Image 1 (cartoon, one colour):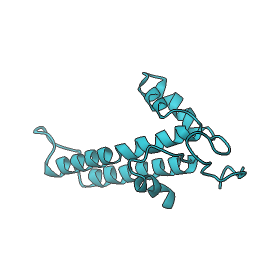
Image 2 (tube, rainbow, N blue to C red):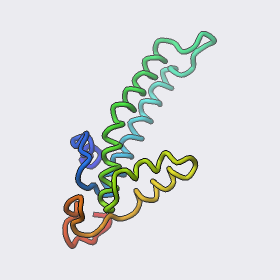
Image 3 (tube, rainbow, N blue to C red):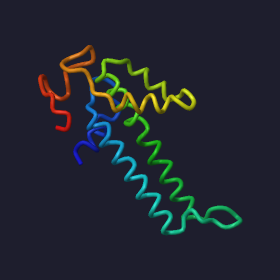
Length: 136
């Protein structure tokens, strides 16, 4: 749980480095929370509006999901930038995600790659010097 919340503690910190574990646990928490919100809304019938459009409950849950996504936009962007920093790449590589069709795939591959060992120009190794255990 600590790894899921760490990017929220560093809400708008675009400096430094983040491990793969921090990034992927944050994404897992994000997807789980979004899934739970959507499931609760679906169970309450929030997304099954009639011919006049969504009802009050539907608008509430749609608004709640929009607030959730917008509220976590900055931390998700910041953790992605720090993940690129861990690989000794500029944070501007995040813009690769805007390339149609292949941009998201390229960013996904970069998020899966291991960071540089030891310190780089963005800071010390978040795993610790000499720690070669991938799953720690």
